Length: 194
Image (cartoon, rainbow, N blue to C red; front, side, top):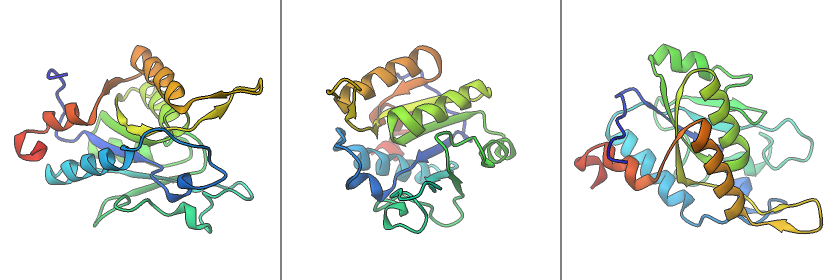
């Protein structure tokens, strides 16, 4: 992926890196490096002085662990805005729906959005699809995403790794470029990748 070129105003969009996903009722996840990779991306973006817009899910559903009044709504350690970095809050699966994300990107003159977060098949995938349909160049950092084991409706469970793999394949086919954390860090230059 050495041919990947990012404009200076490419926006990093961490999605729903929240504490609730580490406990019940959420099912098991598969990617034990999601935090490590996500934090590396944030550090590199900040070092390169590129724009970051954070996304947090503020659920309006009764009993949700992601409601703003619940501890699980808080960001995971090391995630969340620093300084003047903006925060977009949403209550649906797409970061573009019911928020000012599109306006913020347009004010930055940004047409490239780099995403990662939780979960691959829900809010990350939906945000990628909507952003692509709105005309943005979407880049998914697949190894900085995570998702959950899910019931298959027939008494079995679809493993999270399989769900992730299928969604990444679909996004790659139609909606986004797909890269790894290492590939993306390499595009930011040796000083940042070191």
